[in-house]
Image 1 (cartoon, rainbow, N blue to C red):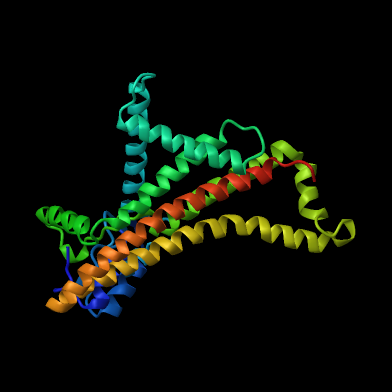
Image 2: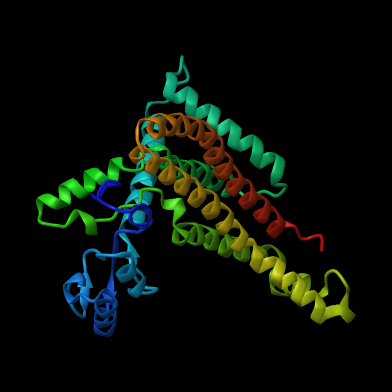
Length: 309
């Protein structure tokens, strides 16, 4: 893992913002990147699958079908940990005096249930479990932003260097929600769920009627379709970008604070104070963003279940 001492500030930032990427790097891209670098050895491999992209430029050249392995790993790991924890608490639950874990889970379930009851007016047994899953999973993914920015990347780089990898070309981003692939994937799944219940509850005619007849009636059908279509399509976009933007900004601030440690004693002491203050404030941000994502999901599902139009 490269550090601020062996990289320029710009290089340090780019390093921390590059994903561990698996993808297909075409031969023409290999040559193009090598020519720009004026060094063919700067590009590793030819027209082939790479375990890792060796630079941010290679990762970008891999295109749409590239896989961010770090995002996949941490999101799946955190989901599995949450599922295992809740399952273990459920298996050990008692009607007697509960332990701390059961108290915590019961309080969390009551909190989610209260918010669902306040936002969802229909009857659907899926909504509350979905809301609980979204809140816990998004919170845990956001929480990774509170870990020291160099800790896990340094550990991963050290392990990979044992196998002969160049630490300068080993990347790891640990906050899945700072990756738009994660936030858009979750938002699109919410969007498809909303569409499913819109068609189920209202029928094809009712759903199309809402898109074409509101708010100006039959004579304003083209304008209705444009306005309602934009409103519908903006839901997943705003849902994804809100979460991504906040977490990306939080990650960037932690990286910039980390750069201050290489600026001498005074800057290092100031960085320590700023890091603590921002971490405390960021606890509110990561919780609020998980809550907003959950609440908007419930609200969108409630709108999908309304048939009075």
